[in-house]
Structure formats: structure tokens, C-alpha cells
Length: 367
Image (cartoon, rainbow, N blue to C red; front, side, top):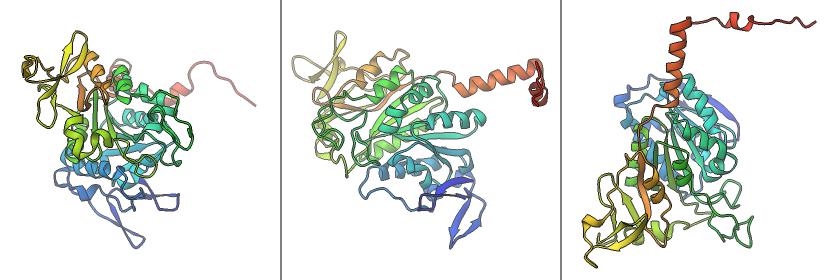
């Protein structure tokens, strides 16, 4: 069963292998994983985001990627908190939880540890994850739970109509900051890397091909995968990323990180990132004797997170905005370590008895 919205704020249960037909449910055997298509992951719920919202592109890419993962629908769970992005589970024909504000990682942890075979996804926004959910965000990453965590970053509170969020830029005028934001914004990637996330990536909603590649790469990572998506809110923060993401300027203002390749960007592919001591700098190939050999080569597998953290701090206008995989390293996942501990305890002491546990130790009778 999956919890889905019925359009009036209430929830109804619908089988993961059923389709609605005039109020009746036609129970069908789902195709095997190898025969699933995008259509199999599209629910029968009306998508209720504003026309033109960047959320549509993210939903479309996730639905397109799911069949390629070779996972049956009944082994997939989407968990969300509160916010525009958090309607996501309704639109996926899988299991799902529309949970509580900021607490999606806690619920996802319970799901994954109870059934490690499930593919668990957390869908969240910059407010849900980084404000009320900041503590849960940090701990699910450091534990390296084998889940996929996608953060929709539109730098605004969209669901509650335009208040500033933890990622709103300094000085931004919003409904709750008419004289400008005086908080310094959170950098989600910096926080993820500092929290020891083993996979950290970023993409842009309107760069559809790149976004799909990042979703697929995140899904295939063993351990926690964190993907930030720059997502335009065309109602309350329209054009927030146009200065680097809009197609006409993207080649000069976005650095596409590719493992094993030099960090080169620009319409003419003649600009790059070079290290000047401990600091990165933008240089032009062909000037002052600079060649491609001088350009920093990207390595996503570095155990030391320093370079990934440095890249996460690069911002416009001094640097191109980096997108792609920043870090992808291996470390035992929390859920696997937990299973190993349980198996070890059972091997040593037997399967145990809940009844004996409850009735062990000191007992009192309350009358």
C-alpha cells in the first residue's frame, strides 16, 4: 500500500500495482523490474505544483531513471517532509510517506533499518531540510545510511508564500524580509561534505540531461547520496539562478565537474581552474604560458574531502558555479553495519525472546 492524496487534503490508500478506474481498483500484477517503464512509476494523482515550477523537471527525471535501476516498485519508498517538494510521494507509483516538517530523515532511517532491501528516497526542500530539519539532515549524512537524498533548493519558502529560507541570498527582499535578508545563507554542499556524506552532487532543474545523470549516479551509490538541485520557483523567487543557469550564459558561468577530466569551462573551452598555492583561481588557457596541463583534474574518489569542500565554496561571480559529482567515496553503510551486529548477536546468543525480555529483571505489580 502507498499513501496518496485524494485532492482534498486527506489521504487514501492505493495499491502499488493498482490503477484507479472510476473509483474502483483494478489489481494487476506489476511487470518484472526489467520490463518497467517510466509510465509504471507515474501515479494517478493530479500534479498540483504551479505551472512552470522546476519541481516538474525533477519529478520527470526521477520517473525516467527508476526503470533503469532494475528495482521492482514494491521495493521503492519515497519519504518527504513539508513543503512544495514534499508532495513528491503522491506522484510516484511506489510506496511513500508524506511525513512531518524536517523529520523525513528520521522516518527514512526507520524504514531502511527495518528493511535494508528497500530503495529509500528522501525528497526535501531548503527550508524543510536546513531549517527545522537541520539536525536530522546532518546525522543521516554522517551515519552513511544507504538512502538517496534529493534537496530542491529554490532559496525561498514557496508553500507558505514567499518568506526567506536558510539559502536565501544576503540582502534578498522577501515577504518576511522587506528590508533585505540579514542572515548569511547556508551552503548545502558545504554542510553535506562537512557531515561526511559519501556522495555529494549538484544539478540544475532546466539542465534535463545532466539532472538525469546525477539522479542515476546517486541511486547507484552504496551509502548515503546527497543531490542538491537548483530549482526555480517561478512564483516567489523567479529567475533566482538565471545569472548562471540560463542557457545563453551557462557555458561561461557553469563548471561541469567530470571525474578524471580537467576543470575546463567557457564557450570556447579555454578557461579553467588552477591551484595557486592553497587557493583556486580562474585562468585562461593560452595566456601567460598556461596550458591544459596546469588545470586541476577532478577526482571524485579522494578520501580527503578538502578539494570537494573547496569546490562547494566556489560561487559566482568570482568562479563558475560547479555542478556534477563533487565526492563519491566508499564506506560501510549504517544499515549494513546494523544488520551485521544483529546477525552477530543472534549467532552468539540465539534469536532471543521478546516475552522473556519483557518479563526479565525486576518486576512490579501495580494495583
